[in-house]
Image 1 (cartoon, rainbow, N blue to C red):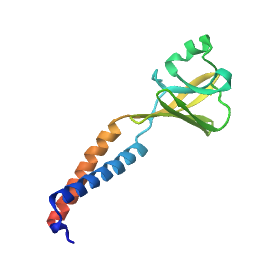
Image 2 (image 1 turned 60 degrees about the vertical axis):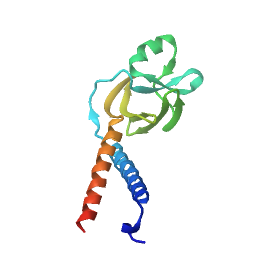
Image 3 (image 1 turned 90 degrees about the vertical axis):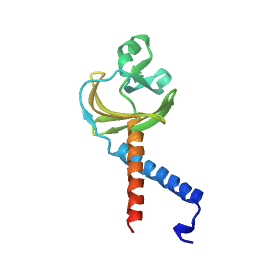
Length: 158
């Protein structure tokens, strides 16, 4: 059956599914290639991986590190092991050690923040970060729409 004999709803459904696939592909590409920002300025919400009560791993926002240490919320930011993850109240916290740096990724369905830092004298020193929010999805929607328009314009030229 050729494309011209498909009904309107079949053509609309195909276009919607193609659009969804293009948005997914573009959004994943934007997330993977999102730029790293090199800085030493911490944002207070960045989560630093720490050893908390009973030796469990948890994440402490950078802005609460000093207060958390004095209140006994954590014992150390020198984490044991090479990698791991933990489910927190607002999402996942994953970490791994790479070349004397700790790469910590806090993520949920609507954001992903990855920081690379080193620990010097029980203090985290920020090296770089990648803060991907809803912008990646918005850019993915725009790129998916433009790709779909381009595909249909190319089809019309035939």
